[in-house]
Length: 131
Image (tube, rainbow, N blue to C red):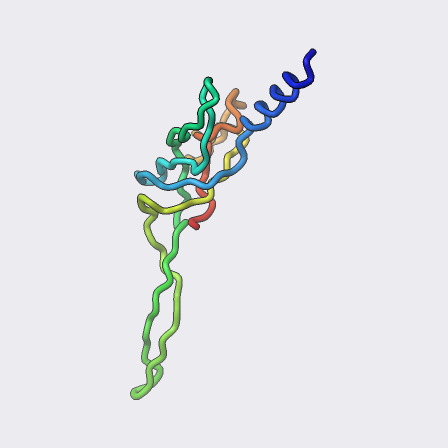
């Protein structure tokens, strides 16, 4: 067997085991967001193309904004401090997504699922952090 062919076969198999990626949020609908991975892929002719958008689960309170609040310490003195306030994920946000080992369709509803055939699929992504 040609070693170059074998090397290419192994390399392509490893590339298709998705683990994590950085993406840009396209839209948000409740607990799910459509995101576009910020890396290119190659088509059958070997040309670079943008990856297709994928659906990612959005955990609650994933995004926070820093706000300054001023409060009264005494009748004549106030203080200002920074606090983190939950914020809404929105189109254009950059996010770090983790890819689950198995289909998460049931898990995100809190249900156990039978062992699925699908694994390391980018549609089983969870937004881990807003960058």
